[in-house]
Length: 182
Image (cartoon, rainbow, N blue to C red; front, side, top):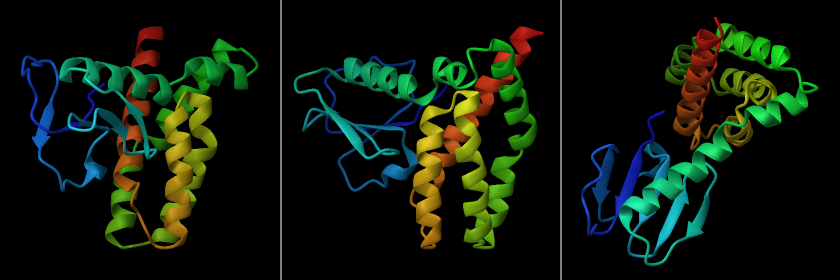
């Protein structure tokens, strides 16, 4: 899955051809990024959750790899989903199929509601996703959906883009795993 990474500061090594990175000196809106690597402060910041980990003296490549490893382990957790589904792989596969069929067009629905500023409808939809995401393995989506749901009660939408990116990546997991099954 592709992650968007913002790097703050001057990197010593630009040999990261397998990553799509944006470099900036600061002042960027972090809503468009899954990870923010601050080389000056030695921090890896996860904008979707507002958390960070300290990494003083670590190189850019190691910071990106550690950040993505941490993010992906928090983002998708099929083991947790199976625990919630009585350890049944069949129920997990069914949950993924249902997620893909029920929410396959969620981005379009959300974009349409957002363009009309129908925050109460967006909140209801985010609530449904929050309630179902864990069954399909979307651990971080469930958390961010809850944050977005709370924001939308106040007509705010700071986690909107994070929510959509996490939704898209969970949908991709569900589709890939169900294709591999067949």
